[in-house]
Image (cartoon, rainbow, N blue to C red; front, side, top):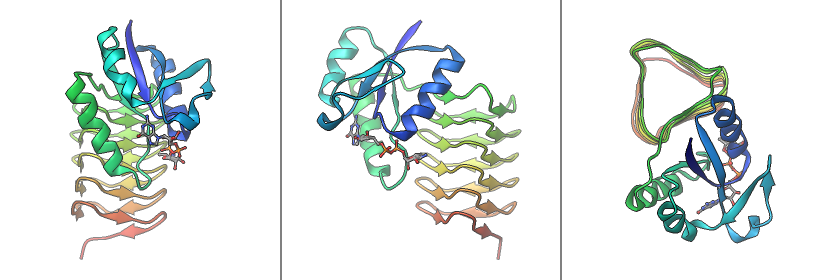
Length: 195
Ligand code: JB2
């Protein structure tokens, strides 16, 4: 089984761990995090060091990595870590919880997380390093840009376009056909309609 190192060991990482364990796709070897988290352990997975350990881990045969730091104000960091990991040579597969429902013609980019009971319907496209969190719905023909975060329970109705680096808060609804530019922030519970 391929070995994977997880970057960041906070709240979002716990969702990622559960999805990886449930899928059985990878052997998790541990986390990298900051020095303050050196003693952290979750389900037996420990912090192996900070991000300076990553090249050594790659040389030792750990070829997969996944950024577990959520969007909340840290999108620049997620982007930096993505570049760092790619420069070292890591592969960044998508992590999809087995309870998610994904139509067969959906495209999902590298490093993207799809959480429990999320639905991504026919012909939708989700870019790289996105988070489609628990129970979110990406309806048919929608396009979600790179580094977007669609939070728990949010709904993108059919044919919505969400520009890169955008955040859609929990339980927000984007009505069908609406296009939102890059760096959009939609607050939790909001309703976005076309003009
Ligand atoms: O440069 C870094 C770095 N900076 C912060 N490298 C590494 N390897 N780790 C870093 N971190 C670590 O990310 C922090 O020390 C911390 O352990 C972790 C972030 O955890 P936190 O629980 O603060 O946030 P999160 O991103 O896991 O979860 C947020 O986003 C999720 C999507 C929360 O708001 C969750 O509620 C939300 N579901």
